[in-house]
Image (cartoon, rainbow, N blue to C red; front, side, top):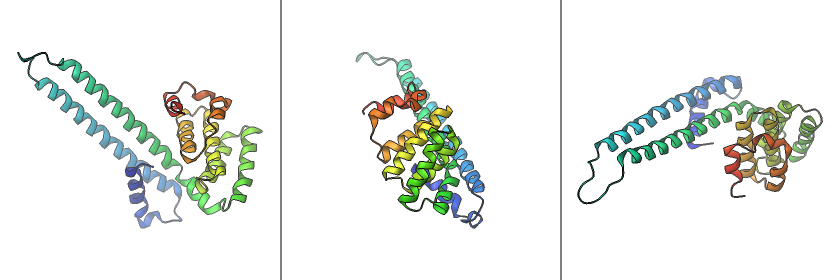
Length: 218
């Protein structure tokens, strides 16, 4: 979770109206409202930076007798491309932040209902895997795998659960969510990269830019 998103969450949960026993949907709504506000602020700031780039390039002097200068139009285009890439990165981060916020009710459910130890986690893992493999009930399996990960993010059962969340989302066609969880699983410790490259559950992701970038150095 990014620093600013963590701050948003702390602000959202600080109010007495958002006590521990409040409906998680209300907490989710507050967080998403604040994330949306941050998105609007980021976009406005980006437009100001683009205007500044254009003004700077237009204000430059014409080439002098001292020697050739860079083409101001081309330089402006480069800076605008860089600004556009920055905008895309910011938008992707904010979109991911919204998806992360939507998982907050499951985090609370995991804390409340478990699994509370690794034996319970393994039992829940087996149930989730059966839903995924045998019944093709991907939404249900994703929910259970997330509960395991949120309780044991650094253990084998936890980061393998995160990987299986990615597989479930891929099979549902939710590519951004799938890559989010693929990134999460690898950061947490999932290291079976050869398996990942061959797993048919992830075939929907092979041509995605984020997927290729994730595996570029592995």
